Amino acid sequence: MTNLRLLATKTSDLEVMASAIQDGIFQIGQSRFDADARSFTLRLSRYMHENASAQRIESGLRFDGVGKVRAQGVAQDKADAYAVVLGLEFEETDAPAGHINLTLAGGGVIQLDVEAIDVTLADMGEPRKTKKIPTHDG
Image (cartoon, rainbow, N blue to C red; front, side, top):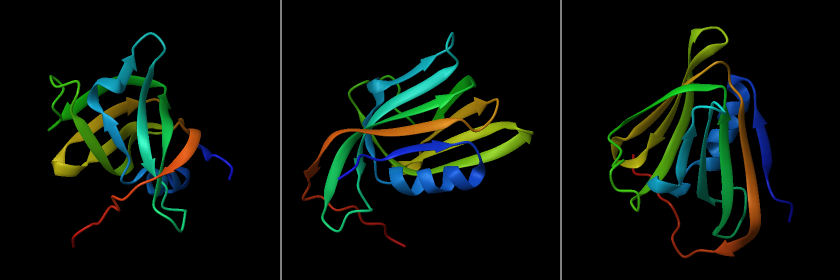
């Protein structure tokens, strides 16, 4: 099996990436905003929706051209807390700039002010089986 590697530079790319990271789990303390590098990164355990069997794989998600990061409904003071990704959307403000919203289960949102859509997803290592299959009510 080949590890997934995706690059998003437009809205349609971001929609594909959103479907790949939906139900990904990450630890709040493992997300990083580097103001000097203008990047936001996080490491997540991605649920592999593309597989017939229930598996997860460690993945890195990097947003470039980031000027500011805001969080709402996220326990930032609890570095060991976990969050689950539900969605990833772009809101254009002054083309090609805008906001990328990383929507989390429980109503949390991490909003990134970006110069343009420039997001990379890369799987790392080998998939592992999981007994926990994500479900979405409604």
